[in-house]
Structure formats: structure tokens, C-alpha cells
Image 1: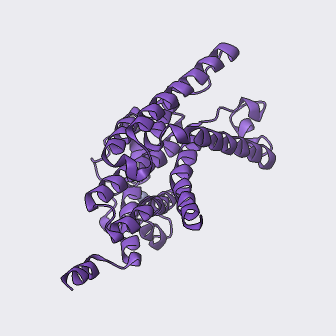
Image 2: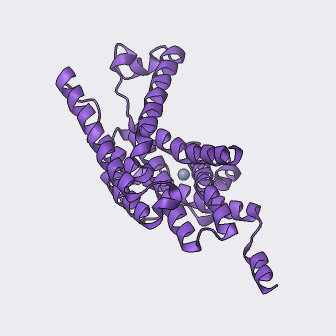
Image 3: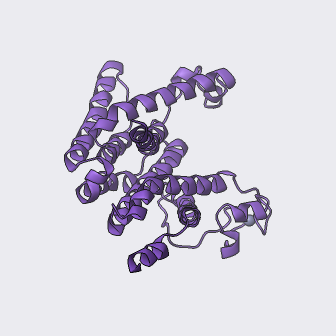
Length: 292
Ligand SMILES: [Zn+2]
């Protein structure tokens, strides 16, 4: 009887948990917008407070509510009415969805008591760290063609730590994590070297090497072939679609004779490949386990 009452008290309705997790994610998304804007410029991410880039007026708390403020303000600065990019609310919404997507598979284990609360906390927070870093890296890489070390270098360490702490629960042992970091980083380094030797120019940045080491550490060596394949296919689809729709306009805009000469950041595709593995692979294996 006591046991049942206790159980009923801790079991929050799943919808309330989901709303809280999404709010949490949206707040991080708001911070990621600051990171994406300031880290490439070498500015502090905590100081000063956010300001309108046009008129410099400080953004107050009610103008800074994720997604909602942008909609309420009609996508314009409250003071000078300059358009605020739709990317800001989109990043906040994406972070909310990612936060929930990462937390979701952990919730049944928490509700049934099969997984301890600290294990869920460590697993969810570390995986959210991973997807938020990937989101920021994807945006910064497509803006500036650089992957900042401050975002990519901690990933292999956090991934390996996560594998030590709750590895078996995620299906990634520390050995698979360590092998993933080495094979991911080393593999990309080898490709880069080969590309440079064959074409006598640099193709991939060293930022991608560190990023791939982080992806390998989080997802394990077993995920790397699928992640690389998905990223390469996404990149090809993107270039193909772009050259069909834009008819090389992007290349023209950048003063290039053909889309083939267009430099493409690979980081965003690696990030998408890694996130889709993290979210879909686990979902698929859950569904398969239920059916067979
Ligand atoms: Zn303004």
C-alpha cells in the first residue's frame, strides 16, 4: 500500500514531463543562439546581456522568451523594428525537440524503476550536451566554415565519461567509445591526408576530425559507418538539390564558375548524421525488440 502510494506520487503524467523537458531545451536553444553569434567572434557568452545588433537596445526578459517572444514581437526588434532572423526561434524550437527526443527513451526505465534516477540524469544531460553542441557546431560551421575547439574538444571526453558511467544502458561500452573516438578521428584524418596527397589541396578541416572523434566517443565505433554514409548522402543530396534549384546561383554568388568549386562545410552533415543515429537507431531497436 505504501509502495503503491509512493509510486503514484513520483509518476508524473508523461505529458507534463515532456513539456518541462521541451521548455528546458528551448532555454538552451536561446543560449545556443548566443553561442553561435558570439563564439566565432571571440566574445564572452555570458557578458554583456543580449542586445539588438542594429540599435543596441538591451533585450529584456519578456523579449527573450524562447519562440514566443519572436512571435509576439512579429519578428522585429521592439525598439527599432529591425527584422530579427527566423533562425532564432527555429534554433530554440529545434533544441526543444532535440531535448525531448534525447530524454524520451530514458523515461520508461525511470518510470518502471529499472534505471536509477542518477543514471537517467547523467545519461540525459550528457546526451543533451552532445546534441546541443552538434546544433551549435552545425550552425557555426555553415556560417564560418570553422568548428570551434571549445565546442568540439570536450565531446570525446564527455562521450568516454558517459560510456564509463552508464555505457551498458545505452548500448555503448567504454571500449566501443574509445575505439569510436580513435577510429572516427583517425579515419577522417586518413581521408584528409589522402585527399590532400591526391588533389594537392585541403578538403576537410581539422575541426571535422575532432568532431568525428566526439561522435565516435558518444555513439561507439559500431555507429561510424552508418553515420558517415548518412552524412555523405545528405551532403550529396544537398549539393544535387542546390545545383538543380539554384542552377549554380550559389556558386555564382561566390564568384565561382561551377557548383563543383563551391567549398562545403562537412560539419553540418556529420552533425545531422550523428543526431539521426542517436534518435532513430534507438527508436528503431526499441520497436524491433517489441515486435520480435
Ligand atoms: Zn533594435
